[in-house]
Image (cartoon, rainbow, N blue to C red):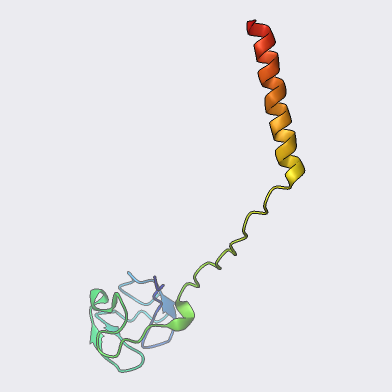
Length: 100
């Protein structure tokens, strides 16, 4: 999603999207104007960029998060499998002795 930035046409001060008046020069805002083609309209018209030329302030766009590399799991060494099987056999033997 694009973060839109708004500037006063009169003095160039960056203003809040919902500002009705420039805090620097006092100019009253009645519409939004595209800096590329000059199209004017309401704020809702510019929700996805300029409706005429499609201009979006690329400097204000949020960068997507970097992709995390997929690291394949390393296969288990044979001694790990042998240790797991021995531990299972030991616990089954202990269980057998307890229940006998």
